[in-house]
Image (cartoon, rainbow, N blue to C red; front, top):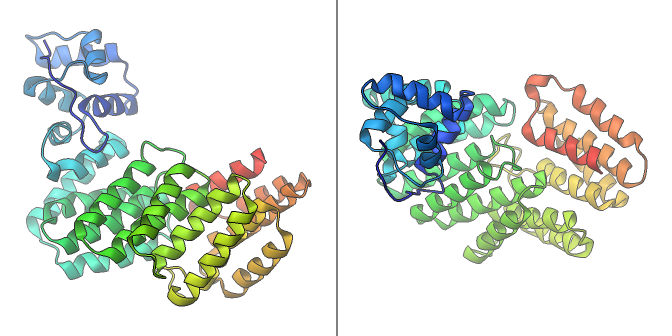
Length: 381
């Protein structure tokens, strides 16, 4: 029978959480899991009540049952063990619960195989960060998520220097963006993880950027506004000088204010964001780690639509149209959907059809979680 034990927690994940997530992803009931475990263990039995107690944290499975759970739930035992002990296994455990276990098992195996045969250098990781930043602008979240899961498994074995924690922070921030912001259990958890990783790096620029990027991502998506405000405030407290992180943080707070109906604060923050951008804005780099002029105006475009400010919307949308690269059609769809939202805010229900047509004209493989959330916001408005 399962042994008694305290409920271990690491980064918000517990053994019970992992068992439940893995079981659910396989479409398996607690009773079915108990039956399969009993068959695997042969001379031992486990009941549905035992499974429930594991998942609720009232009991903790020992090593014997962890090994059989790993077999039945089709995931390496290291994932389950990693929820109890050893900081260095944390990313493995989290990655395992973020995606389907069959996929996770393959990714983790490939990740460890890569780590055994090669040892990526600091320069290799810097190049990987740049590559992910560019790929995110054009590729789907699902593909990025799978690749990142494998690389995070490799990276976790090299977190012995501040610069590697900085790399982990940047990749974890992007990993968070592959989950919808409304899923606080995943996206918000990973934004918080990224902030902790950045703090371990000791690099103030990274600490500000990670928090600012999380704030604008959540604010733009209209999700977890309290978290967006908190992370933005932390970024501004760490270093108030103009930087890309500061631009993101200020614009994240602006969107949160707009969604709460505080137009005066939102517009004042946009002005602050513009002043920070004038000092620290990016060039025309097509990367998720950059904020070029066209992207700043896309941030402002959605905010103007949320406020129903037609004058500001026309101004910033014209600038975004003028500078947006043709290679990034997804972001042009953002602009068209902002126009649909503006119509709705002005009382014209045709704005919903306008936004839907813009989204439907974009090939499905180029859709993003953010666009789908934006469509939901327009329909709800």
